[in-house]
Length: 401
Image (cartoon, rainbow, N blue to C red; front, top):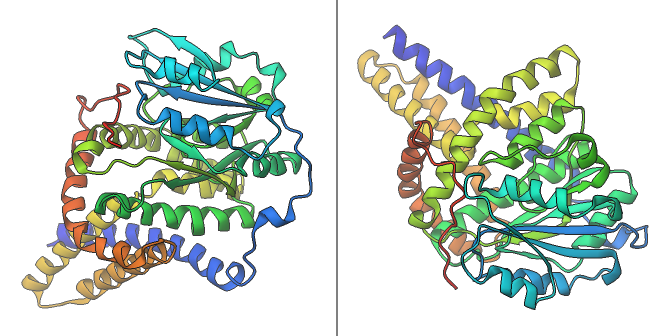
C-alpha cells in the first residue's frame, strides 16, 4: 500500500505542477492579453529590409511541394530580398523536377547513410553562401506560408530578435478526427502559450517548421543537430548558450498533418524517441542551471523538456486515477480520486481553450470522443519509442491529396 500511495502522490504532484504551469499562462492570457489583443500587422514600423534564404528540406515530396512553392511566390515581400532553396535529399520521385519548374534553386543531395532533415539543413547551409543573406527561414516541404510571413519576420529582426519561431498551424484541420485533435493541441500552443510567453519575455520552443535564424547565429553556432528531432536539440543548445527564441504569431506557416493513426505512426515514434532523449540529456541540466544562475528564461525553457506532452500527460493522469480507485477500494478513502478528478477537469478546460480557436468548433469539440482511441495508440508509441529498435531514419509520411 505504501508503494501505491507513493506512486499516486508522485504522479499527482507531477501532473499538478504541469497543469498549474499551463493554467498560469492561460490566466495571464485571459486577464491581460485577450482584451488588448490586436493584429501586430497593423503596427509594423519597418520597411522590408532583411534578406531571406527560405530553405526547404525535401525527401520525396512531389505531392505537396508545388503548393508550398506557389505560396512562396505569393509572399507580400520584395522578390529581390528572398530566394527559395530546395534540398532534394535522396529523392527518387519528381521533387527535383517540380521545384525547378517552380523557379526554386535546387540542391541535390545523395547520402543514404546520413539521411534526415537535420543533415539536409546542414548541407544547405554549407552550400548557399550565407554572407548574402541576413536570415534563414526553414520550412517543411508539405507546408504553406501565409503571404505576410516575411514582413512579420522582418519586423522582428529589425526589433533585434535573432531566433524566431513562426506560428505553426495545421493546414488540413477538418480532414479527419485526428487532424482536428492535432489542431486543437496546436491552437493552445500557437494562440495562448507561446504568444503569452513572448509578451512576458520568455522563450518559445523551436517547432521544426517555420524556424527563422539570423545568419550570424548560424555562423556562430553552426548546425550539427542531425537527430530525428533537430528542432528540440537545437532549441536546447540555444537556451544553454543564453539565446532566446521569439514567437511571431502573425508569421504563419501551416503544415500538412497526417490524417490517420497509420500515417502518423512512424513519424510519432521518431519524434517521441528523440524528445525523450533530448529531455534526459538537457532538461534537468537546464533546470539546474536556471536555478543556480537565477535565469528565468532558462528555467522556463527546461520545463518544456521535463514536462510531458498533452497526450502523455493525460495517459499518466488516467493511470494515477486508476491507482486512486485501487487505493479507495482497499482503504475506503477517496481523497485521491477527488484530486485526480480535479486534474482531469483542468485538462478538459485546456482542451476547450483549444477548441475556441478552431474554425469548425462543434466538429472540433466532438473529436473528444476519439480521444480514447488516440490515447491507446499513443501509449504504444511512447512504449515503442523507448526501445532501441525505435526508428530514427527520415521516413516520408504517406500523403494523399
